[in-house]
Length: 155
Length: 426
Image 1 (cartoon, each protein chain N blue to C red):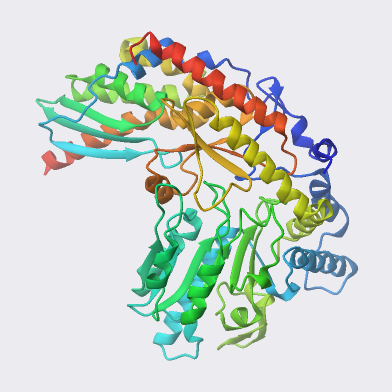
Image 2 (cartoon, helix red, strand yellow):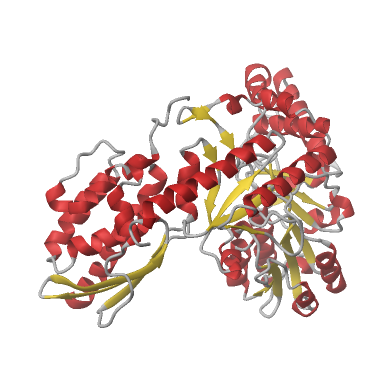
């Protein structure tokens, strides 16, 4: 059906702030020490990310990452690293839930800037179904890392 | 070939994307369909729909005639006999059927049941593939090896995209039961010489399977002349409907191959204890077939044969050469080719500093559809040392003008990202 995809300028996706983080990544380069290392990929496009993390006193510590991927996946990881570094686990969970809600919102969800900070810039990306998993890659990796750390300390 | 006349046959090419004319350069993923193919499905459902190969009424006879008529056309299309063509769900399904037949034969042998030894895999036996296979011609063999204890071996790919074909001699030995490889690479786009593979397999009595998904739609393939035992391809990449694939086998190979899926319409006799089975193709086709699709696939094959496969091949090869030359002349663009041959109908490339996914997005904003990513050939991507590629692929309806638009869009993409990133210190 014609017109199924709303006409959209490419600038709606590639917001300046997204390109800023792409050009100047945050917490990139794997560092010591860490409690857990996770490796996630986007199976369809080959985006590839490794995240290292520690949790101390209920807060995210020592978050570092490295990876190869598109501007959306790489900038999302950087923004995430900036937004949740040193924050407590509950804050991360809230941000993850809000970012996931935004990315699954087909571009009609209004994100909470107080929770997401600069990551609200991804509102435009949510209109492009094929790119949603790029934006979520880093978040899923950190979520996995947190889950593993919780699992190892709950024993 | 009159490309404008051909384009008029494909209704989707009139579509606009982001308010721009569609430039469809993703035919290696799936081709578009001419109106006659679309109409063939409508006509079947409108006038002849009934379960083929059963029933004693007019519609059932018409459906059978149309369905079996399509088999004859498809056979003619690849120079084969109708009873050598098995209808499957997809080329992937065809490969999995052969893999499952090997697994079944191996289990039967373990119980002392009579079975053709060529399909039996014991620990220490091997299957040989190449490193440039589509995942569909790799993962089923990995699973088969897991089930049987057989060993998977492969011909590696050099950085220049060539197969280290001289290793075939040592890879294929007396314990090799199957050699499987692709006819045309879905990523580098070149044709692979089948002769060394056939020779190596025949030397030791191993079966052979050719993945022809990217060759049959674009060139004349007379399968009996190739010397392989099995060949697979799909309808949807050759202007035909989705949901239908083909398995061709020699009569000897199909007779020796154990049944895979069982049920109605493939049996000779059934008692409560056991059953006997029909000969191929019925032996491998339980259930009511995808008749509307087989009939439409026959129409697609006719359409291609009317154009003439030599003309089709010449057209897509010219487009591929033109695209490789024009893209390759853009500073900062690298065209990935194989030292083993020129691309047939697909050209993969990378743009320095811009991830393929971002390139694809920028192209889409100009109405240009390409494939980005690892193209279901992850091991090849790794062997070439690249993260992913952009792939432009062509069919009978593709034009030089569309390639010019692609080139302009790639340059615009470079300019967009260099403007966006230069003042940010990247």
